[in-house]
Length: 379
Image 1 (cartoon, rainbow, N blue to C red):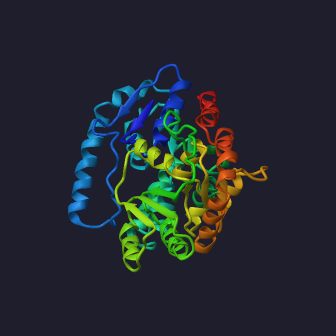
Image 2 (cartoon, helix red, strand yellow):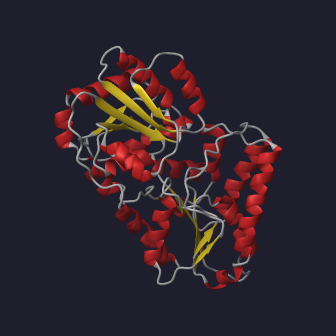
Image 3 (cartoon, rainbow, N blue to C red):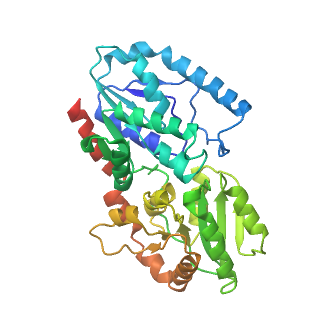
């Protein structure tokens, strides 16, 4: 059974991939899902968690969603396994009140993004020692300890959750993020003509390190005017990036300040010569492999992203992957130098890129299905 108020927008395809993978494992799958959940792109909800009006709107929306789930509670009694997609936290708490007392099935939750680490430490949406931060910690701790299996995306995030919440090592599974493989297929990279096109897209959260990209653009502007950087997206850090761009005359940056559908992102990628990943210097940035990296590698594109523990784990046992370029975190000069190196040797990079090979072997939806197949054995 799939339970919760989750959305399955294409922008965050993890829920789609995990639901599909688990659905293939079980002979019957029932959706107990909020009727108001959608597949639309999420709003840019990056403001600080404050304001009576915002709180009232959120509360009203949640009441409607949980009333919808409550009306479907009779379907829970016959389930052997309940999967609660991301964000699982409030949904798992509510599920505790709906499950029959004698129910003995398996509860699987997705802890993707790590709530306390994301909201408090990385995005700093609430004060670290404030009441809201303690509430976030309690909610995540309760959710994870009430689950039989916890899913997370990388081994580093897995280790962090186990340590932070004193979880049983065997109950926390590292499962790759998952992307829509019908869309993100290998593409032919464009020839190099007048300009070298560099693409970054995202929700402009701190771990992306967009400020480092802008600083690299400033360095490049004085070296090679043919390099152009396209930014696509908006979010928490967008206003500070706008101020950064206004502080100097950036002729080599174009910014589409909006969230766009993945189909449009794919077209942006087809027109680019290389794709940028994340460059933030935070612990969070070091511990994740972002969607854009999955998508670029699935498309067999040239990817430049920060080095760190998560990438070390991904490349364990592999000397190098042609087309995958790693740079130190928060280092605009290293990023600028790497972009110039890819441009100088572009024909070689274009012909030799093997990022799809890495994706297929360690990140693909086939890998995800293999990992989740163990769940049925535990029911």
